[in-house]
Image (cartoon, rainbow, N blue to C red; front, top):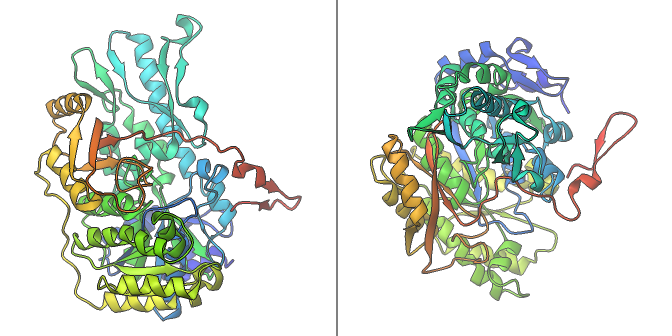
Length: 536
């Protein structure tokens, strides 16, 4: 690894522009962020998304890092803007979130574990608000009719999904049922990632809805005078983190909201800062294009004024085989390609033409790879094989060339799945039909009741964030490939008032994951030299 000051110099930054967190990690200082905010953004944004994920993993983060390394090898001033990993998946089934092989964020173990403490600050701010809510109840038990704000912890712990608090008599509070979310699913995380500065953060925090009063109206963090102290806890966490890739390419790593319960992208502040520092910025959105990609465009870009110049869609032969029935031979791959074809059409609905990154694995045959390339080209889309995991930037130069070619074209005009003024149901229907390929939508009785209440609070016109399984285009995780004729059922509607969107909940979405039978935590250890091992 290079000293982080040397990485900063590649962006024309000096040591005075950084707040150091050891030799290999730093935050951009407040002075630097103010300077970049005034500077006209010159960079072009590239979004990396993927086909519907499988149990194998398709390598989206690895592709993003390999691509930015390939762009630098081809002479571009490029950098990455990525999300911070959550400790829950690191110790759970997924493992680390820093790429892999020769396309890794460094220092990988440090970023995967505590990084610079941003997620801990978000946890603290979330739980400070929870404490202030219960403190208000303790001194005025008639103030709240219902509490909706949950505590959080950055760990997969299924036993905290449903809890009872306040036991032990009045000295310990008022007993009630409660529960925890994982920190990445906290609305504080989504709020911070969409804020564009301190003033905007405090306004958003003040809007957080923590419960319902006896008069049926929402009670907010602002009503409890909590937003100032929460912002104080989040001060350093608002600043993007500077790291590097395996080949010393700069990367801003900041924020990490869930993609199925929030918008699944790194922070607006980090993306904007990167666009002021580099000519090409490569970023990614969580899960497949139907979740993270759609939300990147319909939520993050709509709210921030950003829009990508190009989109890369990650595809693998083994994922195609899985979506086509997971049988040996080429027939499963050809059948499974319907999943990719639908994602391509979804991307084109935004006025963007995707570039396909075909991630190559050791078990792939030439016959399989050639078939995928043939199917992609039949859609009128360009494709390149990507070997970033094994070869780093040199294995990603083909996809880098296609991206640079796309960036020579005129900037696409921003367009979205639905207009701002469309009714809630029409917004959901537009997403379900255009992006998922659904026949129609249906709102449950509870969802209609939720929507009526939120509309009476003046929140009915907010953009929509779909809370849906990442394993299928539909709201049924067992329907692989490209299912047809299905109806998406919205069972509840919630407001993420701080983030600025309505959540349409479909199916069963867990905001507190559990650990698998053999968690990745079993592989981690610490050497006598202080080196963390086993983070994968």
